[in-house]
Length: 207
Length: 381
Image (tube, rainbow over all chains, first blue to last red; front, side, top):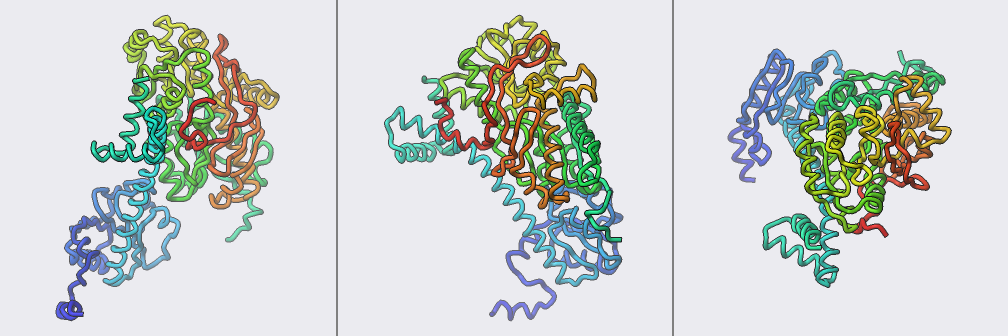
């Protein structure tokens, strides 16, 4: 409660919090017309203390070296995005025009993480930024998880083989074999799958 | 403006991505031909629900990144949702994020290393349990247990060799050499490798070399005077197309495992081969990649007829579980993994550039891309 009281004394400052603290570290590209909303967008983003770069006219290719890209939805925008859908390099927020009605297909093809509709309010800027960033990072985490799962599936095979070798050559029980692998991995600071692969290799040489 | 979708005569537009140029053109061009032959057959028979299939074709020029870029263009600019294409695993992995993010459907007509399952891909080439397992067994029964691995330097050979190594070891064999060459490897690049082969005298060379380099590998082998009767090159990727490019005498006696060879016989295959030759020339052989590229378009057309929509969410369920009398025999799109239950065959190349079948499965072999059914024991019972 006390914190809220404090903030009332600074009405123009954004509420502090984890999300806002993170925003101040961001590198944000803004490719938008410099009308009153464009100006407002740049100003509000600067207030988060993020690094803000304004690009206009829209370059043929947007930069990929950024954390977040705000961009006006123009015809053929997908062509100007420097990555393929499904493998984004930055969070993307598409800014739709006030009129005519936005081309929904074109918007979906850009695979944005959030949308900002002209005319927008200062609050909409911040919520779209927070949402896009969260959505983008979640996608990255899921991709990492899938990669890890793929790798784990493969290494499970090595672990199974190593376990079978230990059970056969050292007369270990199944649980003893797993325990042996874990202990070795810990003491040698290796992954269990690396220990397992070494055992499988050694077994072939010794045979 | 609204048109009733069942009454339209507008064509079904599909994407096609195979390399016409670059070091993979040798085999990818044949996949393009198989694809086009099937499309022509379907259109000649009146199309699908009265609508013609029209392919939008790009040549990614054997560059993996270009496959991703063209997939993006197909789905965004050309408005295509279904794409037929890719030979190398690198190119498939470049297209994967695009079809997954925009919910497209990639039809992939090439054998690969397994360990993948995307809800946006239909896999119609062999998984390792459909070629490597039988090949390893055959080789160990007939030639010996010392293997030398030679592969192109990318995902597929490394992953495929990982599986093969496991099979070889589980059955008491050993891998005495393992080396990788560039996609652009020339004849001279194989000279030091062949010297090493001579020194380590394996019983079998297991090759996962792909594209133009295949020709140089086999020629270099021939220059060293090795005898395929004693130490053959065994491969999962050398088809009739590569044998033709290297010369029939160079290819003679070497071994390949595949679901399909031109020489398998059967009425369905004979008429397929005849149509292919009529369309592309008497000298043009079919191969496993042509065949998969061909039958997958027919499976697509059958599913499309039922779905009457190219929307992936509507089309894909019609594809899963569907069967087809392919040139190789009856095949099934396995609903559990969207891979295809295919025939396992082992062929030995003869003087006419054709493979003589030396072993084959009695029925289609269920696809098991993660080798689940091969648990910890890949040893042969």
